[in-house]
Length: 217
View 1 (cartoon, one colour):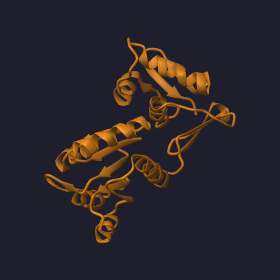
View 2 (tube, helix red, strand yellow):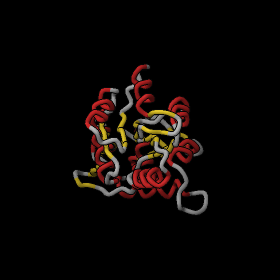
View 3 (cartoon, one colour):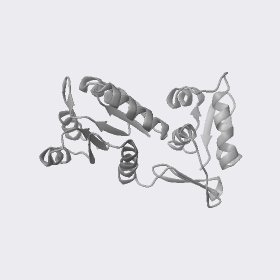
View 4 (cartoon, helix red, strand yellow):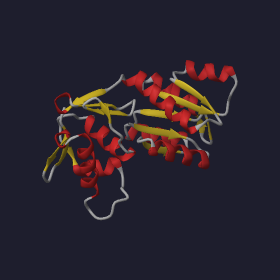
């Protein structure tokens, strides 16, 4: 799942981005309302984490503008404003949840997962003739009824393929979206594909030589 974080405080923004990335999310970080507006128009985040008080405007105004044009993407407000009237204003503007600073990063991940489940449904994908089940909001993989541990990078790759089950995702798009890896050489993507196959079964991901990969539903 792709997340857009709007936060102008460098330390907090960096911590949130790093923690959510380790949890398997793709996080773009905007530091101003103008930057976030541009990213919303040019990209396709699935969920927003929204600070309210920014140098160039109000995150609440950005939220109202989104809802006003029919944009229903889920939004979690992150703010130091802890008055009940502020929370009510954020929820009335269309926020799906509200987290007051300072907050625990583990709670932020849990709330993000909860909002994703409510907004997108369980999104359980069954693969390999039912042998494998993937619940992406819940970060749960089962093979033959047994849980399988997947790394954040493996989840990100699977989630990208799962958006187009049965369709080919070009290699270049996977590398661009999932991001750089720590593996050396030009076969890093193959390394991750191989690891997923060892855990979930070879038939789950199909290779199309010279084109890309697809998830077999």
